[in-house]
Length: 249
Image (cartoon, rainbow, N blue to C red; front, side):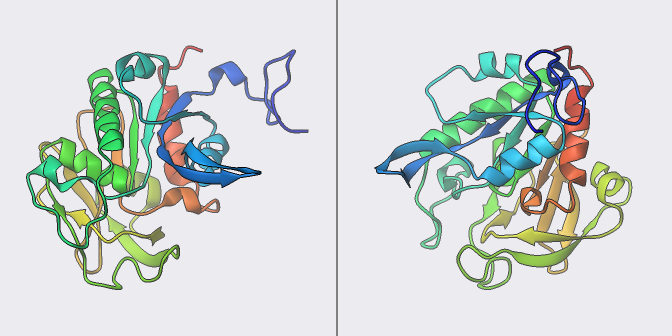
């Protein structure tokens, strides 16, 4: 049996549903097709939802909208900044490279407000791919707008597997150990580091693979896609555990 028991409020594993932290996941607004419909939709890859649920959280989708970031974050226990399109280079004072994708101003603005509200409240934050890049940009850093072709992104919709080595003493090393095989899909990367951030993993070619913000309960960005690997839930488990510390639901 799956789901939550309406009488006891527990899930199939016996966990009290009221104690599962509410985790916001930033999402897309894009054209989508389902059944007989083809129209604008708010969506996110199911892998993010599944990863949060497996780790013990309750996912809440957060599509771009004009306001309300602070009120939403007051009701949530953690924030996942999901992967997606390139961050507008104007946000870090750069002209767009010809290979940089179209700007998505509404999403950039919305996720900036979500991140600011989360940091102000010391809510746990997990940034994935674009989410890590946005974290760096919002704290004053810049991005490399195009990595060498075929290095971290080869063909459309196919992840590249490679090794990363977390820095000794970092939160990431506590979670993953001295090395891990990860799945990545990106053509941009962190350049100048944002204020207060620390690089806590790189790939063999020197590309920044993880960032952390010391002094906060849990602020971690990774350049890869841990949500696509159900056999290695350690990073999402660590994030959900951090989100549970002050949960009173």
